[in-house]
Amino acid sequence: MPVIQIVIFIILGVVAVGTAVGMLLSRNAVYAALFLVLNFATIAILYLILGAPFIALAQITVYAGAIMVLFLFVIMLLGVEKLPFKERLRGQRLIAILLGVVFLGETVLYLVYHGQAGQLPAPASIQFVSPADLGHVLFNEYMLPFEVTSVILLVALVGAIVLTHREKSAAAAEQV
Amino acid sequence: MPVTYYLVLSAIMFVLGVVGVVVRRNAIVIFMSLELMFNAANLLFVAFAAYYQIVTGQLFVFFVMTVAAAEVAVGLALMVAIFRAKHSIDVDQMNSLKG
Image 1 (spheres, chains in turn purple, blue):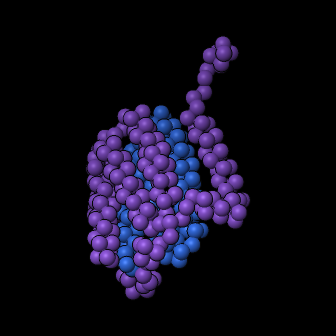
Image 2 (cartoon, helix red, strand yellow):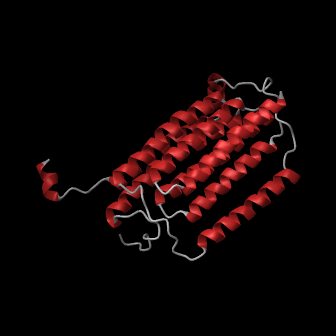
Image 3 (tube, chains in turn blue, green):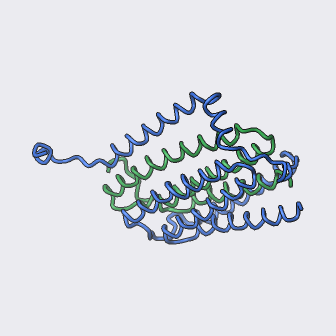
């Protein structure tokens, strides 16, 4: 049984990493956005395996749905899907990839040798956290952070409107 | 199955996000790389929530998602404002404070 579990994980992991690499390499920003949607969907399936159905569906609706639609909307509104792929600083890309690989190697070595070596519970014993349980904890223990979140969203809303609002000329404003 | 597998997958995704921020010049793709890093962190939260069998880890993902949504709304609004001033969102062009 664990073999099937690991095979599923590897398939999902390969898709997640592959779509992330595809996002980095695609020249067209629209393709990058679509790769990212696939990546989010894959991660949502992993959340489901880890017993987090509410988070998985929130991932689909909020990330793959709302946020990526906003991205695609802005890309198409501005018409900036294609930008030159050339580098300004000579050798910057090479150094970045090299340092990225070093950073990854360090992290993985640390995780393998010093990280949590524990086993995840078997899939059968991972309890699915129902949205009701989640809501119970959210509104009992995390009431204040929840309210602060609503203020953050309000500030973001006002900020986005202020930033994109075009000042009308005085004459046009008077006519209205 | 060891929880380390999820940690390694998360580390790979995070590093890909960092490399994306450093390498790409399109500001929107840089934003998408940020989202990728958010996702790597969220995966860690959920993996450890399953590992320790506690609900709080999943709640943090919920909060991270809302903050990410706010960040994207403001960031893309900034992008639109910058595009109006400079007619480009190439980050190499954004080298002056005055629009």
